[in-house]
Image (cartoon, rainbow, N blue to C red; front, top):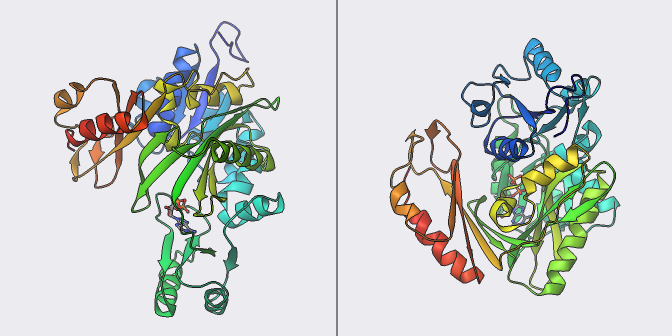
Length: 387
Ligand code: ADP
């Protein structure tokens, strides 16, 4: 058991900024390792907050609450990339925090992130920062339509992206991003006509030890991840190349923790970096039941600078399907019994109080001898649950 840094009679307490499903799965892995968890989130009854007595539901914008959370924690990590690096800086003066505020400054703004990767020689789609309509129209002349206009900060599940097909579109999208008080900073990026989207999770501890997870395929629908197929059904050579690129991405931002690197595979079998998430990633949920060490356990090991565990799969194939809300209303699903009749599936429900259309309410992972077998089980099981 890791001991508290302030009281050797108590277990070590890992503070997590955020109380959603990623924090919940991190907390489950922490408890298994004999580590306590403190959660800070801006509401009560968060999926992770409900698991611990050290729940700080007034959020990090409340200074007294933040101070109480810092006091209760031995070391702090995060479950989302939107925390102001100034707040992380404040925390880091009192307790260690990983990923570091410096890493978060490189990641949080997609333009700075892409510039950092470009300067490290990593392959990316052509992109430019857009500070005016003129720059946007010039960009559209230098690449052909369509292209993608992206908010530099606070984008998730595609909220913050617009695909641009013509000049009229471009002006409309630009004005929408700039309207009222949002005035979001923007970048434009060449549209990638990808054949598959890939992802690789990388764990790295402060001592520099690295574990790389298998390259998986992620299937997006309307910019939201629906399915993850592990390993990706592509040539071994490409999978290895994707892993190499992902490690380089993490090294280029001196990342400590667990990182999800999202990639595009083109028709010519080139790999381009889309973006990096400085936290456990939806594409790595399957690792809970399919790999020797899950992404959540390795995240904890990495931030605590413990030896990392093997990232290898111990099943031949695995498919994860997100269970997305289909209604506005209760977060308690129907037809669980029907779903549980399927063999070889693992069900995760996040205990969110309310369902919304497209909201991630849970996920299932199916394991099998082949990807298509696992997918058939997962798809059939996922169909039977309703929110
Ligand atoms: P978010 O940060 O909101 O997840 P991303 O920039 O990762 O947004 O984009 C979400 C999805 O939109 C991607 O997974 C991909 O399907 C699509 N997308 C993003 N950028 C491009 C691009 N340059 N070309 C084609 N599709 C893209």
